[in-house]
Image 1 (cartoon, one colour):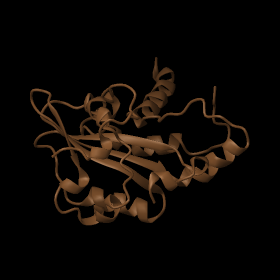
Image 2 (cartoon, rainbow over the protein chains, first blue to last red):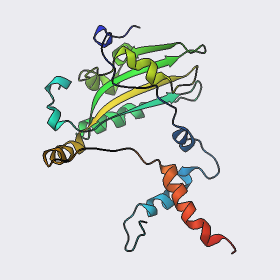
Image 3 (cartoon, each protein chain N blue to C red):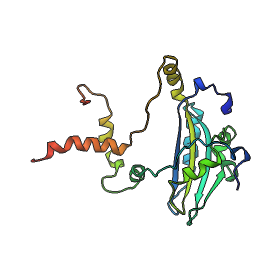
Image 4 (cartoon, helix red, strand yellow):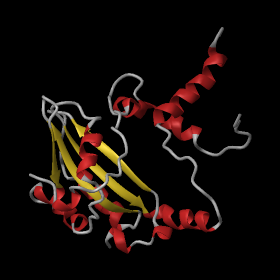
Amino acid sequence: MPLRPSRVGRVGVIRAPVAKTAVVAAAVTPGRGAPVAKTAVVAAAVTPRVGRRRI
Amino acid sequence: MMMTEVSLDELGPVDYVVVEFPVGASSFTGAIAAELRALVDSGTIRVIDVLILTKDADGTVEATELSDGGDLGELQAIEAELGELLAADDVERLAAAMEPGSTAGVLIWENLWAAPFASAVRRSGGQLIADGRIPVQAIIASIEADQAPATVGD
């Protein structure tokens, strides 16, 4: 079905062709070492703790 | 609320995602619509635009309005408030990330939760000079890189 007329002839807001985000594709691919199996590790990494090294 | 009724000073950050559903890999249970509706109902986000894109095997792209997709269910209320921000020119640019033979949903939303903070920053003279998203994979890679030297030679 065609787009609504209001979308035609306007300047777009996406300025360049979008590249596929490979890391996201990897995130949802089940398997050994998949990020979903590392949830606890990531949660620990982003949890504030005293003395966390920043540099 | 239409886009034109939103003061630019009060507009929250606007993000988009293109979510691809490869042929044979999709399983629509209504969960996506329900979660989206919950985000809208809680005032966390405001959905600005939605398009459904299909890319044929030969790379031809077709865009479908949400309202043309049949029974909207949970999305009915959302569809009524869409701002139709995307232009026809955006379709090909967004579809560049799609694999041939796939279908994708494009979602554009305003982060209402961030609007008051962003507005305060602007009123204070702050200017956004960079933003982005840190993929979970990058966090994992950082953690693993930190841990790697400690395991060498064990």
